Length: 221
Image (cartoon, rainbow, N blue to C red; front, side):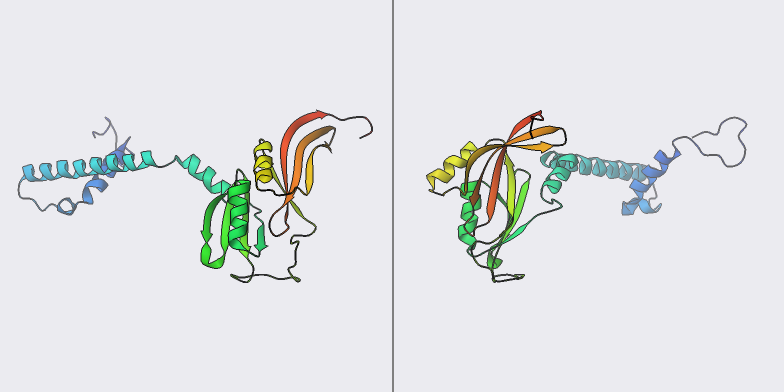
């Protein structure tokens, strides 16, 4: 890079960093870290070899990245697997509960530790953990008697609840609350749910809902 006419003393040269960066890449090769060669032609050849090696590494890394989801998708997956609130349900029979949540309700297993009777499950944006009592670590605040989870129900929103209703009927699982349409006041509007409740093998109440949309506030509400 030539100095500008009339320039004196130190001055930052435009895009000088490109040159310095290239020197840094070349110095990673042992034969180019110092001026070992007796002939200029040998140094030129080694520079070409170093740059070919750099390009091949970049091309190979590019093919690996094509097989991976973009960073945005990776962050979305991570977010879906780490909700701020994920309930852990103490259960009595790991295999029975896992069969209910996976094969009947439709959850998928994110990961599990069979020796501990533990599984992390996901259904859409809903996430829960199940953990067999006394097989791993169990926190007891009182006797764990059926039905478990008294005083709480877990609402799980689905696009359609009819396919789940069919599976429950096929497996002869009785509903705790039959299907209903319910409208709830939300400020100056009402939001609607088509919903039902069912108990899991340990008695935990699961409330599955289907969105009915929004309507104006009804008189007398």
